[in-house]
Length: 89
Image (cartoon, rainbow, N blue to C red; front, side):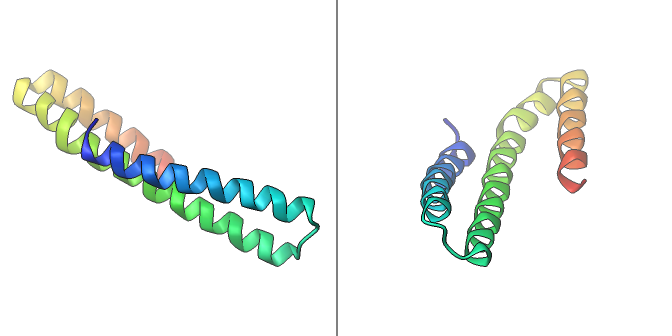
C-alpha cells in the first residue's frame, strides 16, 4: 500500500467515527446547525482523503506508466484529468 493510501485510510477511519457520532446526534435530536457543522467537517475530511489517494496514484502509477511508454502514460494522465473534472464540479 502506498503512502497516499495509508494516509487516506487514517482519514477515512476518522470520518467513519464522525459519521457514527452524527448518527447519535440525530438520534438524540441535537441542534441542527451542530449536526450540519459536523457533516461539513466530514465532507472536508473525505476531500482530503481523496487528494491523498490521487497524490499517491500520480506519484506511483502515473509516474511508472509515463516511464513505461507514451500510450500508458497518456492513458493515466487522462484518468487524472477525468477525476479532477469530477472533483471541481
